[in-house]
Figure (cartoon, helix red, strand yellow):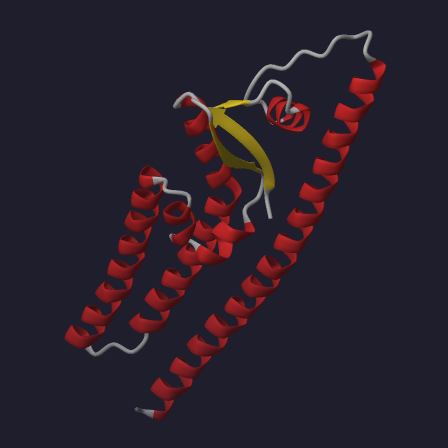
Length: 188
């Protein structure tokens, strides 16, 4: 999960998030709809429609030309762009969502030291701590240290499956091309 901070506007409280979003990676278009983020939902919908149209173009091309080698290429382009776009959205959606909330007038509560520290550390807001208050500085540094540690762990956990998926996709493409060449060589 991403790092959750609380924002307030006109007496209402709402959660904002910073960092990598596992929910966006796995749930995609549902995340902006759960958060009632219309702009984000429309962006996700546009990406989904583009990916679906690419797959449909591959199917139409196959039906028109009856060229078997076209389908795996478009299918892997469809999957590849899906995974790449999914990971990019997982890295950037929370940042965009939180910045849009801040631009819309949402602000961290004055007494919420954790949210103020995290948002300042990620560069969303400016937050000054009195240099004489060493206890508060130590607490804020602890928040930052824990957040960074958690984000590094999430990055590592995200990169390992990506590398595995890329290796599997490479071997599937290589085997698919090899199979097509063997079929053509046999005269089918």
